[in-house]
Length: 504
Image 1: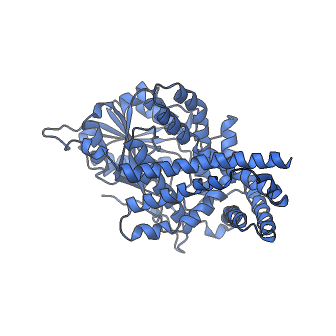
Image 2: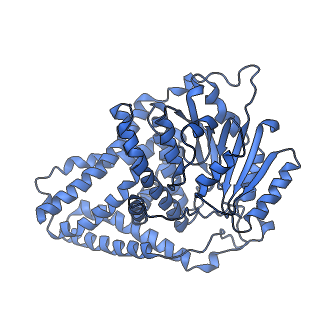
Image 3: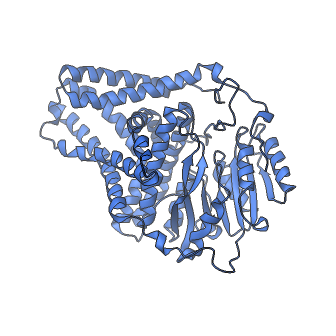
């Protein structure tokens, strides 16, 4: 039994180490290879260039705090008015629709080709809305912005560049980088900013630069219409319709492009409950996409390296159930004095722990050269704690995705990031429901604390420090969720006139 316990821990450790080493490999590729795609882009726009027609799709569902801001920013894009079409794809059941209608009418009077497409039945969620909108436009290119984004006026022209450079006819999608308008708002926002910077600063950049599979991030990207249709259009059978379509398109030969220097400002989730909702949807959706994508990747006529990296990409959220398994196995291992691990090459597995820190350091150094990158990197311990703490919720999402348990597309609550602040200074947020996941987080925090005490008693210092991270993470996530649920005095309701109504 003791030996079986040791082998179980060893296998879980190897699995986690693989993902850590993969992060290290991507970082080393970035550091030693650099970006090569820049020199492939022709000067843009060339003489006598005619801008193509572009449709901006704005899918919204019950977003009264940010819908005005979203529509206003899309309408202010610097682009020929006769070539710009804006679709507000509204599935709302609250007051969002009336606000959207008001803004649509406002911009119509100022010459914008803008329309509101409202669906009374929210079939297939965001994927269904995007597919429905596509049926109402014939534009050659289609850009997508979620409700929490505020595209800069010059975003569209810059995002179109790769389509008209060398080899541009084979490009099906261009993704731009997210930046964060409220990253200094709280420690939670700081940790999220660091997490996303790692993704956009290294992962997306390296995958795009080396021709590996990578995904559309669901927003702040622009598609060639022909690519969407040729790849089977948007499917609503997963919660990650973006990842699903991305792989279907690339497996049909379409090239994806990432522009790290073109940014799209967006709002980060401001509460722990909102962050968990977002992560649950991303985790479950990606695992649902695994069921569809992995067989196609294995059968694709591409090299083994590209297949391997595709598998690493789509299965990334599997690290969370592995982390929970590590915690659960730690108590019996501590009680038997770690004898179960004798003879197993555990020391070499530590190399995997170098991957994520180096990736985040390289990302911050790349995106924010100078002194600022180091200040941002100092938030890594908090991100580590957050990443472990959300493991319970994401484990539930992974299991739900593997078993194909149906659940609704739950939107991430928005606050307006500064434009929806009450007189007391508290940010507008939505009521929070405490579920079984929160109590499991408390239970695992206590469980990890017991292991820490035992390891300190037996002087297993390394393991004590390691488990203390899990203890702190589970406790932080659980306590923050409870605080948000039982502090109604922080909930502010604003009348429509208090929302962002700034016009040009």
